[in-house]
Image 1 (cartoon, rainbow, N blue to C red):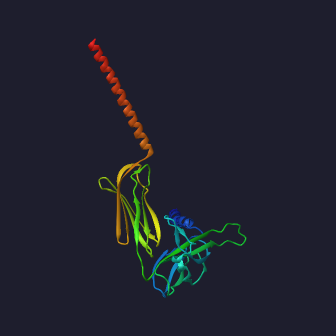
Image 2 (tube, one colour; image 1 turned 135 degrees about the vertical axis):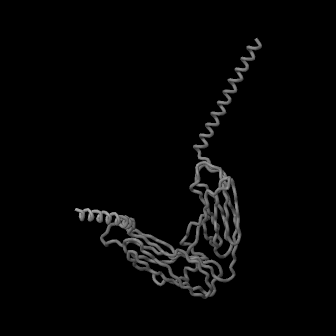
Image 3 (spheres, rainbow, N blue to C red; image 1 turned 60 degrees about the horizontal axis):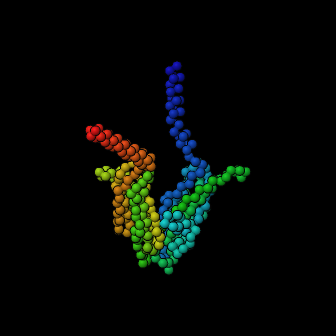
Length: 307
């Protein structure tokens, strides 16, 4: 009897301990592509041959084939929507990149190294050059399968600067922190222009404090500005309450410059505004009625005294 109990306890314990592994396995998708790292920042010289690599990872349950190809990297508008088709002087690097392979197969949980080389011409102009190496994959399906193939695509961004007469220049064109909000998120914005011939990084920060100086939120972001572009960046305080008064401070740091903007921010949800307004109206009406009633009482009292 004791042995039976012991076996029951051990069996239950093993079943309990195996649950996380089962749940974990169920959470892993059939197809999951990852690359590491995702960005390369390179300083290149005319006539140089640079070699590099990144990893392609299959962290899913199924084997898949993949293809590798190169595209230019540019942006559209101040919102920095990526454009992988625009071929301009700043994307000539797409012609200089050679891939060691353009396709492959990855088994589940397998990692492969993708090697490439960049052959910089002698007469290339100085400044920034931008490209992306895409890895695209499709899930392997049986020949007679009627399912739709699932595809994933990830990009390895290349930010490069060619040695020579490099011109760095940037200006803060606009920055604002609206003072009145009816609901979260509280948002600040800034528009910065890169007037040089190479990219630079901008560090953005939004600090929210109470009027007594207590920190409520601190949001930091880092973004790259490509040459001859403008970028609009918004920082959000998503967890802001529906009512309050706070001090907001925004800073932008780039090319050795720091810009700061501050504003007192008032947050009031429409429901709170409606309730407050209704309460005030009722209060004003009540006070007015009371004054009228008291005035008539005094008039009657004065009339009685005079009679």
